[in-house]
Image (cartoon, rainbow, N blue to C red; front, side):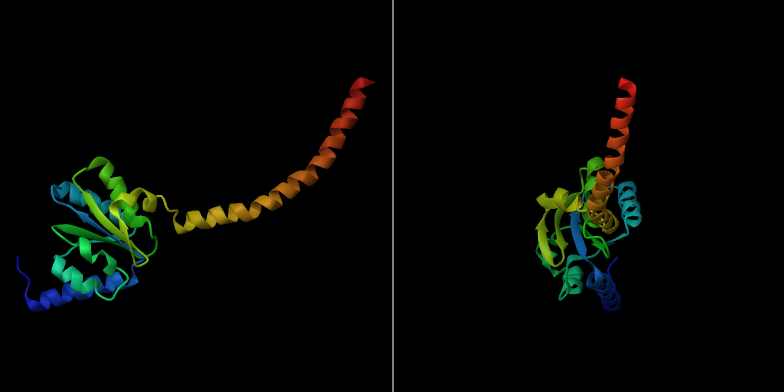
Length: 172
């Protein structure tokens, strides 16, 4: 169904509002996917807090202009779906990678992370980025390691002394 000018302006405004706050964006060609597969893709995106949009390429180019997602405009060719993540830079890549495992018809064309274009062959690398919570827990574990080692070392002194006394007792 063709959109009139007002409807096109609304679509451009909606996509622009999402793109302005997005930390990452993904572009994938969905040719060959049926309705059930698209529904599964949308459900997995919702679970990962990623918003998916199917938009005409000309409208998408206008909506992405002067945003951090503008870097993906060269790959907006053919029937594409745009995925936007507001919080996690690797979320879109993870959604696409997990979906591709079961559905080879989805072809990732590229990703935009922090305003930089990332080629589709880097999908696995971007998808393996830790989430914010994972990164915080890794940092906390790193900060806790020296303290744990100090406590273990201090605990070894009385333990060794107890072992020596027990060994002397067993000898007598």
